[in-house]
Image (cartoon, rainbow, N blue to C red; front, side, top):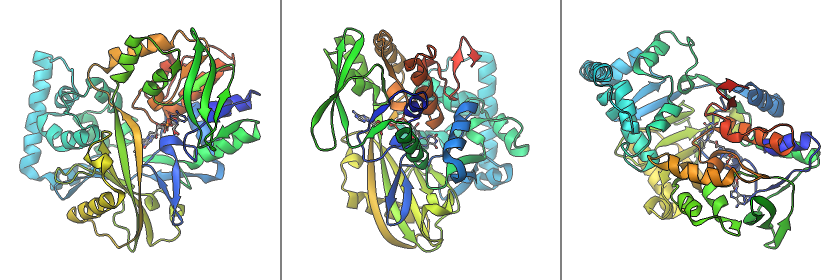
Length: 458
Ligand SMILES: Cc1cc2nc3c(=O)[nH]c(=O)nc-3n(C[C@H](O)[C@H](O)[C@H](O)COP(=O)(O)OP(=O)(O)OC[C@H]3O[C@@H](n4cnc5c(N)ncnc54)[C@H](O)[C@@H]3O)c2cc1C
């Protein structure tokens, strides 16, 4: 949507083909019984000034500044996230706190003396935080989300996501907050009054006003190419009719592996194999409308407890009061992560709702009356940043780099575990390349959504 808006604002005719019935992708917002539900909790935070300004400009009077309250639930105890020393000490008790400190000191000593090679996520976290804290705060949650052992997840992912954070940095942040911006610890975020997707709904209106078109319930099926030039895309429209679209430049935010499979003539076998090897994790959001007192005050809670399979719970009423029609109505998402075809993915909606409610009760979360429910399944929601994925990406990327009028953008589109700000930045820069305003390479947008050319921030 950011790309389409940039094109529309520069006098080009942008046409968006979107498979779903609304825009926003994984950051869309759904309506149900007068409530608004995001796919999962979405906070907006960016270090990219331009993207921040775009967010504020497009949201206009609907932009809210939300004080973040998030906690970790582990073995029936709540831990503030970010960490606060008194709460952590009380929650863990003196003995466990001493164990954590000892294992941290051991890890730091190993770091200095043995200089271990950090290949996996587990290596990286143990090196930074010590094994005991890894076991309590990182292992169960991470394995619920990714479905693979922390030994198979690449250290790159930890480096990207929790960069700048160490036990000492977390403690320093708790004692003297706001000293330095550490992304995972930021305690305030921006949020559109009517949900994360409101930003994209507003962009859609601006695209239309600028002469662009958004075809919804329309699916790209095939991408025709002549060598390294895309000549047309073929898509099925909302009425089921197959249509052809010819443009000057094409941007794709569909999953990278889907894009590679859609070429006609097909991409070389090695590229297809590399794309096939990229794994994505699916997301299942069980949506509950609850009447009565708020079940918890947090925006969301990370559920580390190993005895339930849910990973996170959120209440959108705690993001914005306009997400539900009344103060005693709450819009909750209970999140599960799975691979296509496994038990969670293929469970019926009724079974998933029953599982979510029973797990919430088991965790001691008091629920009022269940007034309604539905389930949203999102395929390819999380690219699995496992060891070895880099070589596959390199193979796919070197094929795509040769195209003169095609750029992949966005999260699944570039197989990056990134946030909205990154997706928006890649869209903006790719649109500028398409418009001939420069040769911006979306692959140079880093995890912070910042464009880096030769190490320089543009
Ligand atoms: C549970 C969860 C929580 C998150 N929390 C946060 C957060 O707190 N903060 C944050 O900033 N980000 C968060 N994100 C990430 C954020 O949602 C994504 O970074 C962002 O939505 C990526 O946008 P995108 O346009 O690149 O891709 P997507 O949102 O994946 O959009 C791609 C679009 O392409 C469409 N599409 C795919 N294939 C086709 C096809 N063949 N034809 C037509 N259309 C097609 C899809 O329907 C989809 O609408 C979260 C994501 C999830 C899943």
